[in-house]
Amino acid sequence: MKGERVAQLELLLRSHPEGLRRAEIARRLGVHRSTISRYVEDLSEHIDVYEENNLIKIRQKEDDENIALSIYESLAFNLSAEILINNSEIQSPHLASGLRKIAMNMRSYAPKVSDNMLMVAEKIDQEVQKNRGKNSKYNTILEVLIDAWVTGRIVRIELNNGDEIELAPYFIGFRDENKTRQPISVTGRLRHTKEIITLDITKIVSATLLDETYTIPDNLKPFKMDKEKEDSYDAIDMVPLKLELQEKSALNAFRNIVHGEISISKDQGNKLICSFEAENSIELMMKIFQCGKSVKIISPDSYREKYLDYLNQIISSYN
Image (cartoon, rainbow, N blue to C red; front, side):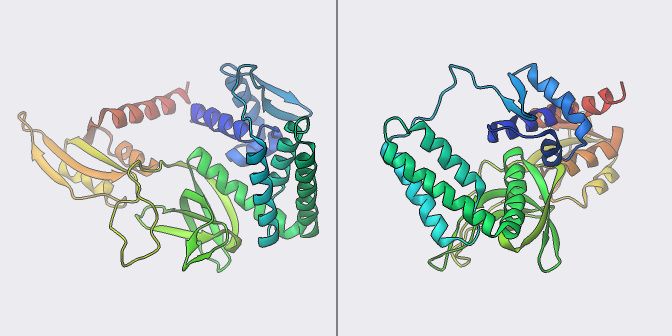
């Protein structure tokens, strides 16, 4: 778990080059603030992490590749930002910050475009302040959803109708439906199911990161809005498990997780071999752990190694 937290910390800091305060990092990672120093120390063994004005940052190396935008590319971003201002009730301070960075980088060779970008950024900030309460709540929820998407963590969502769900985000952005552009939404898989849903972010009351992780399946097909033409496919990340069973009753432990058809046979040594596809989740590991010596992972090797690594993390936490 510790190594996973350090990896999540690196992703967060790379997503926020301007730096993050320790309290904000703790909130986004879902840990106590007192543990952040240890994670920062562990991360600094691999990359150059430093603190400036109470902000934790990753120091960019001289040979790091910088994004160089042409005047046309920069102007395209600027025009897109203006369109977003005029067609969205919600404004993002991150858009203003990004425009300012682009503007400052091109000030020497395109001062007019740079000035216009700074004006657009200022207009965005004014809109953010004008509707501070609404914008702040929306952007806080959006940041949590983005963090969940970037770090591969399940998020608990409370909707404005009182429902509470747990979601594995697969995509965040605009979507087209009935030939009209809809608000920014999050699309993902409902936990413990194969169901893919899309939520308007303005309908979300709160979002909380959970410790459970997920992976987006490599064979995931594009989301189709036309139900009549939609092909059936597995939207959930499944693991093709092959287990050696000491007793058949051990399979009862897997009843509450998503799984495919179970096939049972005997090998040459007359041992029970069970094969089935199961959801790739922390719950699956917990079920295998619950079985103790009654179940042994035969394949795939990658999942067996992942399971052993998880057990070693548990053991090391007691040392």
